[in-house]
Image 1 (cartoon, rainbow, N blue to C red):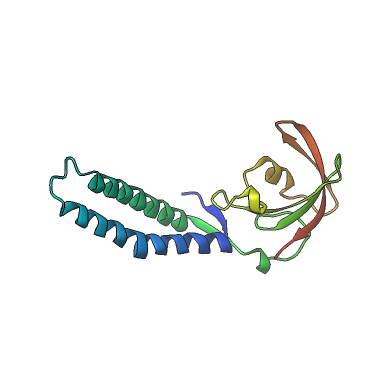
Image 2 (image 1 turned 120 degrees about the vertical axis):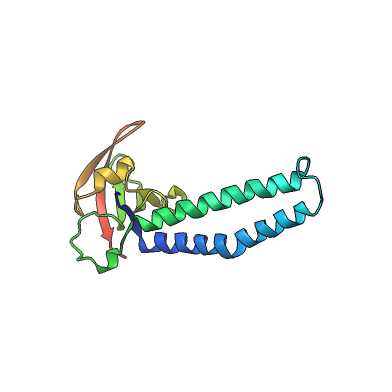
Length: 158
């Protein structure tokens, strides 16, 4: 089984979601099913069918999270030597050489990626182009709109 790279924050978020699903959502859904059963005929009971569907989604998500956590390789970049190289988990400050625009991205696992908050997947084209490069290097990234060149202005191991 291959390991799934994950940051410490990503693991914590998954564990919190798992705990919520098991201790809050699952009991609420079970209570809703029990209440819907009391209403009688299950064939035409929309509340019962909706609750069963919710239960299926909840149990599926629990299994998915447990599987991801079982195969997770948690990487804490704060404990790694600061070499200035771009690796999984670091936050990279980039300067677009064409527009002089600056962006900051943290390279995270697929489940943690959220471009709105500056987190990109380790499997994204930008991250793949950056991994292994050092501060000060210029990197060409193939995008749907063509090749974009970025200068690595900073690598933060926080």
